Image (cartoon, rainbow, N blue to C red):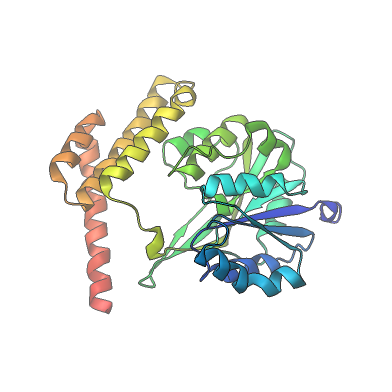
Length: 307
C-alpha cells in the first residue's frame, strides 16, 4: 500500500436535514486508518435556513481543526446535485461518498484501495458489504460477494449497492459525468448502473459501512414510490436492451416483483396482483411474494414481542 498512500482520496458528504447525525458521519471519516484524505461537506439545506445554521454550528470545530471543507448551496436542490458540487471542488484521485446518516468503519478506504491496487483501468470502482441498523435495533447485513461485470446483477436486484459503500476512480466519475440531478429517488441505483455498465467493479467482502435506517428516510406513499421506480426503469431501458432477452426478462421480473411486495405491505391487494401478473411469471412471483411476506410479518411480530 505504500505507493497508494501518495493518492489523495476525496470523501464527499452531502447533507440535508442531517444536523443530528452528520457529526457522527464526519467523525467516522476522520477516523480512517488511511490518512491521505480530504473531506468535503456540501450543505443542501439552503443558505440561512435553520437547518443549515444548525449543521454549521454542529461541525464548526471539525471544519476549523481538520481538513474539512464546508460548501453551502444557496437553495435546496437535491442529494445528487450536492454530490456533484462536492466532486467539482475536490482534488482526489479517488472519490468516496458518505451520506450524512451513514458511518464508515475505520478500515473502509484502506481496504478498498488495496482491492483496486493492481487492477487495470477497466476497474472503475470498488464496493463493500454493509450493515443496516433499524430504529427498533434490528440489524441486517448486506453482503458483497461478486466482482467484475456487475451491471446485470445490479439491474436484476441480485446485489445491493449504496453510494456510501463506493470508492470510485476520478477518471471513471468524469467519464459518466457524475450523478443525474433529475432523479428524485433511486439516485444511487441510476448512478451505479451507468458506472457498472462502463467499468468492472472490485469487491471488499468485509462490512465497511453502517447504515442507520431513520424515520426521515421512510419511503413516501406507495404510489409515489412506484412512480419513481417506473421512471428509473424507463431511463435504464437503453442499457437493459443491451442484455440478452432472457436477462431482460429477469430484470423486469425482479422490479415487478419488488413493486408487488410494496403494494402488499401497503395492503393494496388489487394493485399487488396486477403488478404480479405484469411480471409475466405470476406463479413464481406469488411463491416468492408469499415467502417474503411471511418473513416480513414474522419480523414485525418478533419486534412487537420484544417491545
